[in-house]
Length: 405
Ligand code: AMP
Image 1 (cartoon, rainbow, N blue to C red):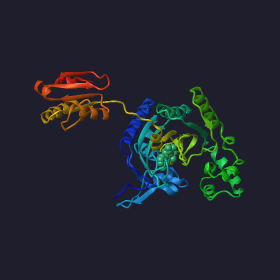
Image 2: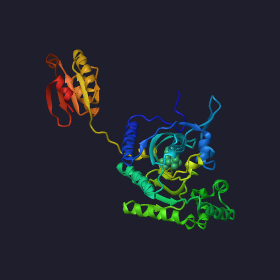
Image 3: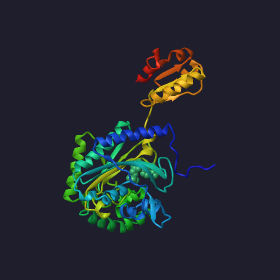
């Protein structure tokens, strides 16, 4: 038997219904915040991720589905959504328009990670990216959108915030940190590698021994320049005013190289080790790094697979069930269903059976209304109708059935 690849899964009903319910709700909320839908290819040139996500990240260093295509191009199945959206933003010269652009996307991402609960090799993200807005109100708006999506599904969370500084204040901090790290004994192998490639990433090491050592490390918050300090404090004020609870997490450095200033993460207590639901932040240098005009930007991505684990979704009664007591009746309901399906969901039973059997099936299918054609109805072009919610029963002309809501 051929099975799906490890870390990849089929999403069948009822999970697929939950997926669509999530997408519909999230995209409606994103649209309310001014975001428009963007779709970019699943395959991109490898260099796009090397230059954006960064060679020091786990994603580029270890996890990419990278191959040479038949034309000899070095390509990657996208491991995240931001880089492709930024590439598209520049390619279509939106960076030259001096306007604000807000996009949302959703779809599959691919990372060759060790599969575990909440971690897949093909997983799904819903993300938003906003370009051209320097104001910290935009960072706050995105966090409010993230909160609003989680609240809509009654998902409890903790919001972690940090500021990663900017090209003015981050390099002097990194220098101090490297100095500190070079004097550290006993840090893990991963941290030794990070120390060389991207030192601030040591701060989110999960090894308790390393964490103990880093307690005395220099703090980025002491190095923030006045502008970064002011933005970070304004962001906190805005969130507090809107009743958003958060905690400052100085170790929140995020795995990707392109973040500047605001970094945030929504985490859940109800998931296992893989507890991050939403990750995002500001990336004011990325557009320029990829060859575009300098453009401030901020975005986030939601891990849909993890959200689906936490959503309760009970489908309500909906639509119609059409059945017949004998073969001739099936001809009638077949035509009737075609017309009714122009505006309503109709389940059509091809097999004639007793009224009792039809009602039982209709109840299982959770429809609102049942329509049955028997011998009497056949003669008079009518249909017997029962509303399963109000329990009302009546016989009505076939044309009247088409008008039922
Ligand atoms: P990142 O792009 O790493 O910031 O991830 C953003 C969000 O995507 C995370 O908060 C997770 O919810 C989700 N995510 C990342 N990697 C995976 C994975 N391998 N499987 C499932 N969800 C993931």
